[in-house]
Image (cartoon, rainbow, N blue to C red; front, side, top):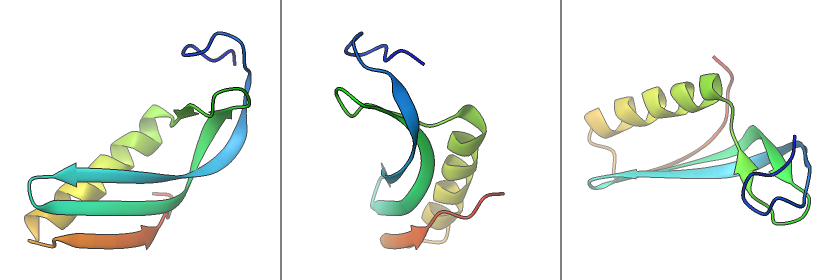
Length: 75
């Protein structure tokens, strides 16, 4: 797909690190599948993956965890 940010690059499949913060909780998830622009590096995570990440983050925050670093595991 064409990058909507820089308008010059094309995206290719890759793995990225996503950091989510909510109140006192910070969640870092490594090796998340995404499309990455070969020009500017913008990362695009598909909707299903994003929903899974947000659900995971909500559970972590609800449990009172302050910092969590984990590998991505598909739902």
